[in-house]
Length: 500
Ligand code: GLN
Image 1: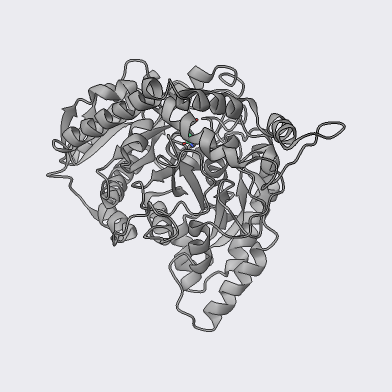
Image 2: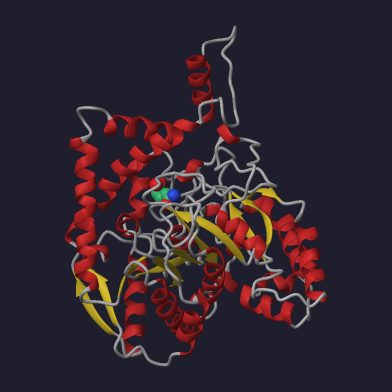
């Protein structure tokens, strides 16, 4: 039965529909896998005690002949940034330790309604600030490819859970790369949808104008199946797009079956194909481009001159929004309350709580953001960063006039060692140089595995970006590329050595 943990969600779904296997069996196999390996990986902050009962309910509904969605009975892991009414939701922070929200985030509610079975909550950098999961208040998650290395961040827990075969699917959130960069360094597929494509209701906010919830999986089709479940308009999120979305699973199946990419223009972003990247990452990226050319695609070089300023603009806009969003953790409404010895005023209780409840990276960003928004500096910092954001959006518009999708490596290096960058914020921030532009412009992006780097044998990721609302294009072209890469490299996850 442990073989069940190797199957993609789409295959589990077929077996469940044909009643070759029950959801209870599938869920139990994954809970057993978690029990066996999560002591080493630490992908989970909380494992659900309701998963088997939820699986049994799906099995019973199927037995009664209920019409079930394609992922009914398939287990899923949930990044701890998403509110769940039956499990703690900490966002990786001490300040929310043990907090159980009174409601489910919309993507979680939609998964439950579709019969997916939540396995538990996954580890993350505190409030999704980081690229390594080392900023979690609950200790780091380890990369299943090498337990001494980081699984990326902030959603390292979701990516590691999927890479370690603890879950076939997971939810993540991506504000500057937190789905795609962990995907790149763990050999998983991750998608940041178009801004507004998936509801943010019940996602603990980092930077509201950048945050998007999205799927984490081992195949492009699996990511599409999950995106179909969680996406679409939600009146509870005022930024949710009213669009009717096509089936992303259909797009992925179409792409997987396509034998030619003739007529597809692939835009290589000159500024994201940099000499500063790890040699093996650049090599695998150029090999992937050759596969696309051999399949008939046309490569066009595009320039996005303002991408150079994306990281700088992001690290003004994000802290500004985060400082405002995190003001609600005031010791009165949520979670932790620390009273100074001998008591204190409301302000003193608030200060003591935030002093103990927030880690150093959160404090750094709250201070930065508060400064950037303060009277007298607002125009110089926040105002300028917003202008740069507009220039980046124009770069995208110009590039998409020349190309159907834009491509780059999904991360500049393979997974680095735990401890290597944790004390160097700038080195940490530069991990998202290729992913941040998409968040600033609101366009969708996908990371998918493009083979192992020759120098260290670790996964590398390919990034595809499409114009806003064209997420289906990512799934179509992504699935074709995935097939071509699979023919070349084989199924790389089968070779994850740490947990074989
Ligand atoms: N690593 C980036 C940051 O620290 C991205 C975070 C995210 O996407 N949540 O802000």
